[in-house]
Image (cartoon, rainbow, N blue to C red; front, side):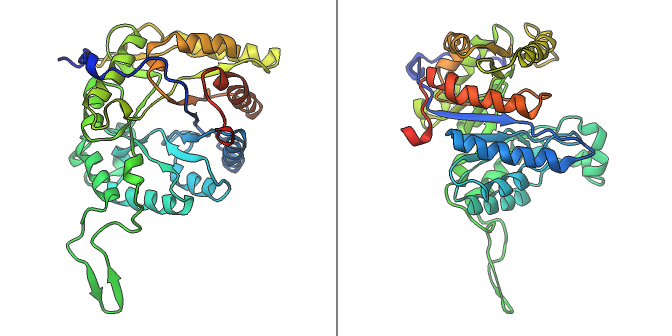
Length: 351
């Protein structure tokens, strides 16, 4: 088997045409660098609105040195106090910029505060543009940092409650534990891996993680064919088999209630990004899915024609990066009220 040729295993292939069961949105949480409070407040307001619309989850991108959310755990903590039901995730946190033990403490704390609603989405490898800030992140150890899958395993051990300290018991008047505190049972089962290559798909499956697949994958061939094969391979290797959780993230922009001006803005956004579609980039053959734009009826037809989409029951539709709050409001409203019901989804209160 090669990196770009997922294994075929018909006995484990998921049933086609799974109805959409869980609806999520992924946001970058953009803000004005001169007024960051307004953008962060809008993100929190958007999360409240998504819960009111019946969405099952919201996912926050994790960005460094950009005008997007750099501390999703802090934002999730705030959102957990303004919502009661919607699940909160990261898509994804690059572990190369994190200490797994400290990250586990933060994730567990927010999971406790949220009542068990946190979905940590993670990836490994060097962070984007790492060479530009490695000296600030790891001034003494940059060349020694391990960005392999071992970093993921360290996080899993901490979240699972493994003994990581050599001491537990009382010192003076203080009690100490040998595992990360607080411990939040069930959190480790909600860890997702953002996998784009065949190697990462296989690692996530064998580690028993959930699988986030997006509009960027690694492999030669038709995008949908490669992505669908990765999903099948993941389930064939996962302990939960056909029931292993997979969430797909594509940029999907419905226009049902959009104004003519908004439609033109969306078309320009899509046209610029479409220039990279149908090509592969770099030694790993990275390729991008086209953004989908149209009425909900048109979008449902396009999605249901995609083999990969028919294999999933969960989505985290990605909001475009550079639009306005009014655009995002229109898009999430149309997804919930027009598009998702055509895909088999019903709001949480109607199930």
